[in-house]
Amino acid sequence: MQYIDKIKQSSDYIKARLTQSPQIGIILGSGLGVLADELEEFIEIPYADIPHFPVSTVEGHDGKLVIGNLEGKCVMMMKGRFHYYEGYEMQQVAYPVRVMKYLGINDLLVTNAAGGINPEYEPGDLMVIKDHIKFFDESPLRGGNEEAFGLRFNDMSEAYKKMLREMVKEAAYGLGIVLQEGVYVYMPGPSYETPAEIKMLNIVGADAVGMSTVPEVITASHAKMNVIGVSCITNMAAGILDQPLHHQEVMDTAERVKEKFLGLVKAVIGRWEVN
Image 1 (cartoon, rainbow, N blue to C red):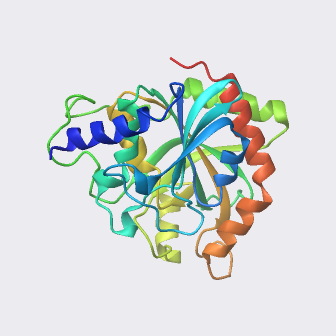
Image 2 (cartoon, rainbow, N blue to C red):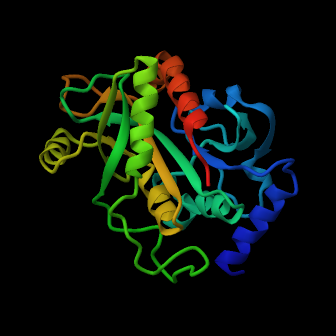
Image 3 (cartoon, one colour):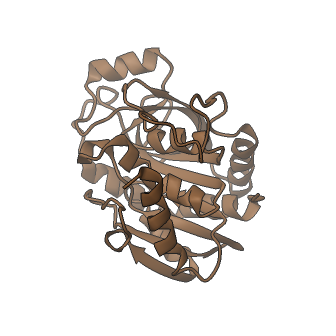
């Protein structure tokens, strides 16, 4: 079966269960699934029920779509994402973004839990992503180009829309939230980076590091979607502090800052002028 036919089958399955058309897609990072509890008039669709959809395997990723109303907008929320380190191919990691686009969604909010590289950051900070770095070679666009979504060679000069970043900063200011703005670097994982790697990443201009987000953003940019990225700095990266890294710290910090995270995302969705 052709890739585009799989996307159509997944989309048709979801569309048959919708009572309204989603306007904004949201991808939730580790420990940030609590946002789904804020939706009104929602439905849930387990990933395992959707034809050709991958299934989440990581703690903090529940593995279901939640579609409902948030701040006057209909949103489609991924409560759990897919990672290359789980064994999926890059096209599978980015597959849900293509499904969202096929369903008519042109606006996407991506969130993640990230390690802080910038020494001025602290665990619990929120960072709006202004750009990213991808050292890892493989791209979700590798292989035959899907002309239905975008051009063979897509422009990445403004993958995270400046106008939308300003909207996020205004929303944070209105809530009294100190918001960082920085560069997110993608590393494939699942091992955390070494102190030497973090030192290198700092030198090349990275402010935070994580194991997700960039494949989805590349795919969304290819499809001309409007993207906002927000990182929750859940820990300082290797070598910044003299302590070992553990996924439980990620989960604990996400729990600690959930009210700040919820407030910012809800304010952003309320301000978002969808296409």
